[in-house]
Image (cartoon, rainbow, N blue to C red; front, side, top):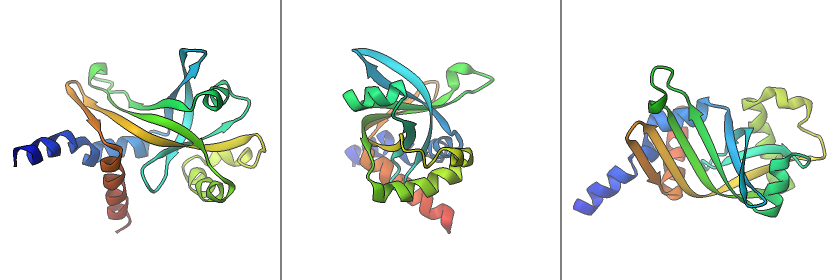
Length: 169
């Protein structure tokens, strides 16, 4: 019973509505890649697939894409500033490996991506742009000052699907 209580406390942010809301509302994130052994951060527009995995649409010419091709290990941080108390700002960092999606999945992601980022329509079919999905290994959630938790990817995926299902009802 004690272990179940601890487990529910540790996983609480994964099922936390504000955490899902953050990821749904904020459309831009900081992507950190490896640039010759040094962290390289860049802003990217992202979306989330039905499994709760972030994905990006980027050009092969971009530095971050070149970095991903050399080392697919990345982090993607979504952040929403608390204007009253910067230290209480909510954020979530997804850690894992970026995987280029195949043509079949590309069409599915394209439709969803354009719903979230309609201005991408002007370059969505450019040949040097591709979708990359983040295969999540770890998730670090900060709900505000002192509200910090690591969340397991399976728990996040399960809660994302449940939250998405509730929204559709």
